Image 1 (tube, rainbow, N blue to C red):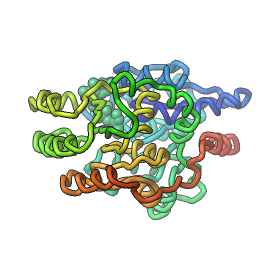
Image 2 (image 1 turned 90 degrees about the vertical axis):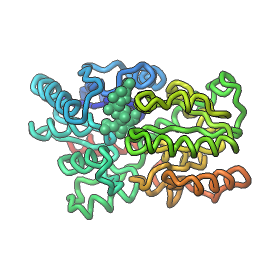
Image 3 (image 1 turned 180 degrees about the horizontal axis):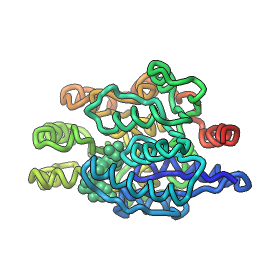
Length: 365
Ligand code: UD1
């Protein structure tokens, strides 16, 4: 029996591990699976609610790290995870995405000569001021099995000189979760709860340090939202980091008092995806939401200068807009008056990614 440890720590990890854990259940005679939660995210809305919505089994181990600076958070995860690995000695550690937990756990495992699989490998924004970009580069450079969600990932890894045998183009695991939960997503009553009508509002999410950490950028965003809200109602489930920053800069009241702007707590998975699916457009700086809107064919205005997920622009509904107010307002006008250009679903975003990953693992470990 081989032992596999699956790591999750922050909100965007949970929808990536859910299908993997489910698929691994079919191989109970071959693998013992241990789920480890690092505790990078800990609020009910940022963690537990996803375990409930996505029926993820309770973690075997919770490292309870919590929020800290990057160095301390990464270091604390490494210290506690090393002890766990010494005790459990798994054959494989699976990490997903690009958060600090991904980096910390892959680094510890590889130094103990334990194989590492990285799900969502190869994505590059080519912007090293983004903490996630450092996490991606380091994790990929030390992982043994690289599971890639879109073709750009394969090209990036090839350019970085990664041995082709390590790279497996398997598609997007988050899409497995989205497709398999569509009936439940459709049943959400979140629109009714907030008195919203289908396709009459925009959804906003913002949490990147480059957008929310400084007073200047928050004020720029305020101007953009004030103007956009004159055209369409905006619904904003606020990330705790952003709330904290708005409070620190004494700006929360300003945002709360915006007209045609609904500021709400973070939502669970089904409610959030229902909100997105039925929206007219999305404004975001998230990574995963660029992909979910592509699948759902909802126009996505990404408030960043770059994306590590270029397929969402080339084939999907994504448009990079940064904090360019004029451009944002122009695209909002277009989205409101006509259908934006047709999009298609990228290769292997078909709900079978977990199956493809586990198929590789059964042959390799
Ligand atoms: C992390 C990931 C980011 C991901 C995002 C999704 C890293 C480097 N960043 O960013 O890639 O897109 O999660 O949410 O790993 N906080 C709470 N409650 C929580 C969690 C966080 O209040 O449950 C607040 C704390 O004030 C904390 C801040 O949010 O200091 C930032 O949390 P952190 O985990 O450091 O990074 P995120 O911004 O959430």
